[in-house]
Length: 84
Image (tube, rainbow, N blue to C red; front, top):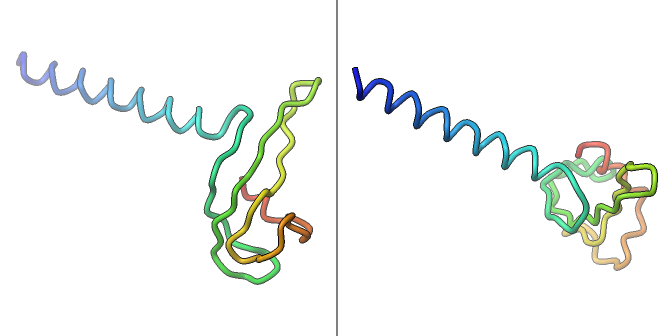
């Protein structure tokens, strides 16, 4: 019976950590890499995204780098940001 409570407690701790990591990954400002599907070329792409908090608490995002585009800065309409 003690083993059952230990396993359940361990599973709960792991679920809390995974939830925290997933929530923290999708919030806040900073640079991050994401895998998305390019709406222009209809291909999977890896993009570098800069997230910035505005004064109203909203977050604005822009693509800094895209593996499908050799252009820097990225000049497409950045429609892939709707997938984040």
